[in-house]
Image (cartoon, rainbow, N blue to C red; front, side, top):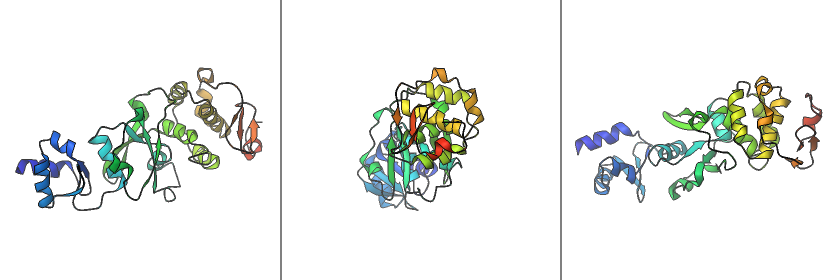
Length: 257
């Protein structure tokens, strides 16, 4: 028993969420877990879910548990991913909203959806063909390593959420700072995307801010569809990409219009 409690203490930290299926895999049965609860190593939150005693679990503990114990294909997405890679000045405003991409329509446990004090914004990237691990990166949050989208993919998730999840202006402001994207990664990403409006908006913002990487993308490989798309209501039409955008983006400081 001593070796099992040692294993638990070495593989979790105070505040870590722990699921029974993961414990069972490592030789800790439900009855042994109950003993750890009685000894106050663990605290039971609900059936099959514990927290290592010592602090209250936070949202990042919940995501870490999904990724590492349950192997659910999720990653921090869009605004949250950019924030933890130092690309957003809006962290304070959005700390209770966490953008999460859930791939392959994976099922999320009830306890996760009901996790207190956080507003999960869930995305699926369903119009994007699978891209592989090179579009994920590791971010460090309070001592835990969590998978997040790379800057190229986070930018895609950001413009994909305009205007329902984020305003055009806020997305544009963040896009302005994305000066170091890999043209090859952006081109491959947009080539794999069937979301016509998202593809157009991604390229529009890249051109608007005259990002140097945007000049190195072969736009003929990207599905831009046909016909006009209304991104915002009451906007003006950008003639090149055939999307309506806020009128100040047509006249202000770009070679468009």
